[in-house]
Image (tube, rainbow, N blue to C red; front, side, top):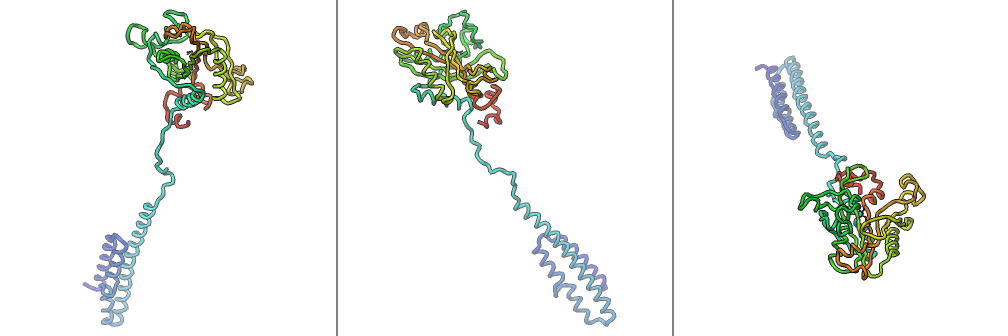
Length: 345
Ligand code: DAH
């Protein structure tokens, strides 16, 4: 093999081996193997001594070229490996600034529950206890015991949903929280100072201000010598405690079968504080619910002596309170359980 052929083989060999090297350390040792004193090139270089001048010049040039070719192969591979190394380091050290630290997503009480909790706090602070009753009721509790006999015209005040259980129309989804009054009175003798929050149902088509299911809170006081003044005073004390001192209450004559006399319970408009605005129809008042003195027939249905005891009751919707407080304009939001809505409160 001529020297030229040998040098060409060294160059080819260097190129193919450099391409196979996987790390910079391996490349360094390949470099000393191919270019060091003991390398094939080194030996050929030593052999130059034995050549005459003309041959030596040509062979020297060929050796330099071969040396440069080996060096170029090593340099090219080094550039590749360094670029790879840099890419790997960048990947390893990358910080994803869009990544949020995984905090535990804590849930919280539903807005409706929060509202009932606040209402309960205020009434408990006034000495009331909290009671609950079933949502599926008998006709007796929902109507008859509340002085609404069968086929009484007042039944049309409640668009009732019936449950297919027992004789036709004997079981209802309670249309108000008032039946819990009956259950509380059945539960023991007066004195009674209780509130009864809960879910109620009516045959209604859902829209922004109606739902076939909604929430109410009921109040019942039975004691000796309770008067209409106690009712008015209790509702006024509740109003200022719950809504703040700027909001007051008023009572307007009304009709409910289970109270006599009966009244509507209004509060100053929460938006204009009584000035009159679009929301309150320029009256300065908002209707909250109903109230009155417990009807003697209601006492009779639980075996209380109306000569001995007297009392008042009230009931109002609570969803509107949540909505007013948080500027919610569609009651359906309270029931659809969209997490994007719920997490705001
Ligand atoms: N239950 C009535 C309703 O849902 C509200 C109500 C009015 C409750 C007068 C009462 C009351 O306790 O005394 O429309």
